[in-house]
Image (tube, rainbow, N blue to C red; front, side, top):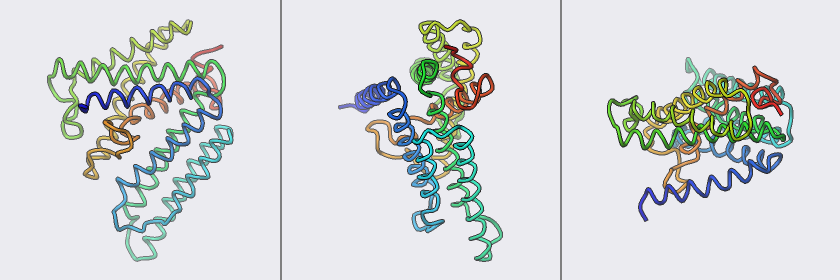
Length: 281
């Protein structure tokens, strides 16, 4: 079996499972978000922690488990955002104190990366869970997000291979081209508008702009994860998904776009029900 066939099969299985849990919403979808949060942080620390480093013990993991419990319990957005802030501040502060006690002038990079990983994983799970909520606007918002991000990824891949041309960010991700980025943006906007129209949304002009923003943020999220991997001399974030690498390799663009859509929805409506600002019932 070729690598492309393996990638396609893995992608189809993941899409079916993800869409099924998205359709169910509620606790099943929050379980998906919780699992994604844990796996993102696990892969982040496997990349960023030196092999021999004892670091902060299990403090970051313990804090993350408290956050995941709050996420599954369905606590309000204000509490979840507070938990993310506390996780990051406590981890950074403890790391700084440990370095001060050993006579070193600044926080060890491992502590910085652990704090950053908690923010990245926590915001990823929080954004997806609160976007989905438990109502019809939440379902449409997540499907809109999936349509934009997946179409961006697919269009960028095939347009980039077909057209080629100048590289987008050769020092970070040598395989990506400017033509692929443009093709991905066009594909993402078209897919987003088709999904919005099928869902009966009336504000298509606004949603077209939102889709463009999400497509660009998705590609930026992909580049960010590539930078983290290159910074730590890793080809993939993990090996969990056959043909794709790790979970972060598969959701890097999605979680970045999810946070962007969550912020847009928060501005349009509320932090607890962001989808209602873009897809009113």
